[in-house]
Length: 307
Image 1 (tube, rainbow, N blue to C red):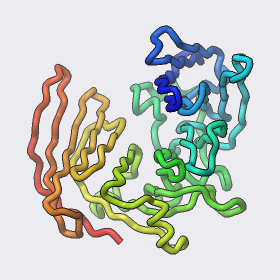
Image 2 (image 1 turned 45 degrees about the vertical axis):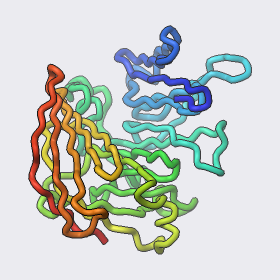
Image 3 (image 1 turned 90 degrees about the horizontal axis):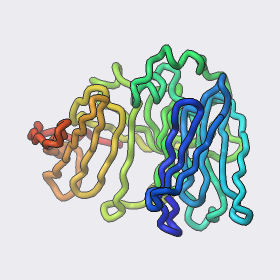
Image 4 (image 1 turned 30 degrees about the vertical axis):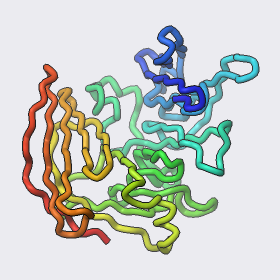
């Protein structure tokens, strides 16, 4: 989305090394990209720039960037080699007071080697059809994070820590440091689930009316002492492929399954603020294939303590 002109566009990755960018407002305005990457290394991720007419396609060996020159209107492209596959690819929002509208920032990361391809999970592509993609095992210095998903503030990123397999929230590390991303917050799953599951789908939501900015919280914390946040169980969804979070006084978690069902977990606070031991009522709204909504009043869930 181009916020300066209120231009809304969607980028689509198609079979046959093709990509499509479609302008939602101007129905006839679309750009088609052919022969992306190579036959031996087909594109596996796509990202569209929110500030300008630019789209990136990621593959095993790097990123292919396409953009329109603002002065000449000419279509340009450039190839950026990478040491790790680009399974997750995002343009980062500009940081307030730091980045100009002309600066492009991207983050690319691989899916965890033990996880199926994102296409396998989201679109039901079989492993046999991915044979040409090859296998990849990280080597020292190649990747210190997996499955990176940026937050809307332009600073912070959700990602998987390779060594522990846990979800982290962090930001860019100082140049020359041992890692690319600082670990500021560690998200710990419930004890009875941590032995069997590793986070593979995650999302975030922000509502500044009920809290402080991350930058304000980290300025009051010692950088070498990250915060630990313990999670609680709210429900089970079979074959989950994506998540969305609507934050606010009553948080709602939307889950999307491979069967085409949408589950909405509505968390209702029993007190004005959350404390250890508080209870939350989980209301599950299930969207059926015919569009009907089924309401299931869930059990009371007790929040776990966080330090």
